[in-house]
Length: 239
Image (cartoon, rainbow, N blue to C red):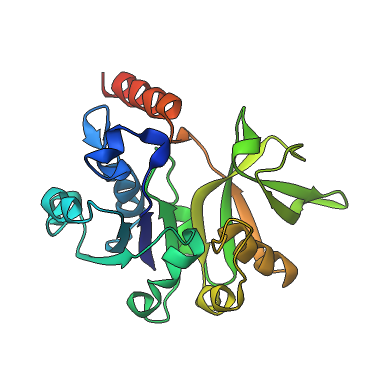
């Protein structure tokens, strides 16, 4: 299993902070934001990691992370996403890095203390997504559970106005090698991006998507409010 962290984009919701550096290098309490998804992967036994970066501050990642060995990374690579093409497009840049292996993907603004090592050890094929009950599901991809079998998801809707559940698809996913083929046949959404929700729905169509409920704390830190909330959580946990 290899790990991919998507950390591109301009981080416009965090202007003016992101005028001076990439969003994923902003501090969440006493660590750069990117350290949290790295630790999630390393704690799960994944020490070969590619970080997909983008925007005008890509060089800052090298200054911050260097070889990654101090964080437990055995092999670290970078890929540059030339423009904001969506999470799926960012993941497509890791195809050569994956070398046909399964991949665990996490968004660079996700902070969690969940232990996914069991999921990583058990995963063989298909796709697995991680869900979390949240107060604001309309900000995320939201699953619709099959009424005949609530253990299955019948579809995922991106940022629905009227969510079918209070669960969010967190920015943490596991895929087999088919993910790169699915991305290649995806069409851009109305906002001109390749959506990871479309990829997940392809796996649902083939009956090969499973899900786990993410235990412990999870929050994306992509807005001023959630950046503050995440920082407060990790500050309390450190005491």
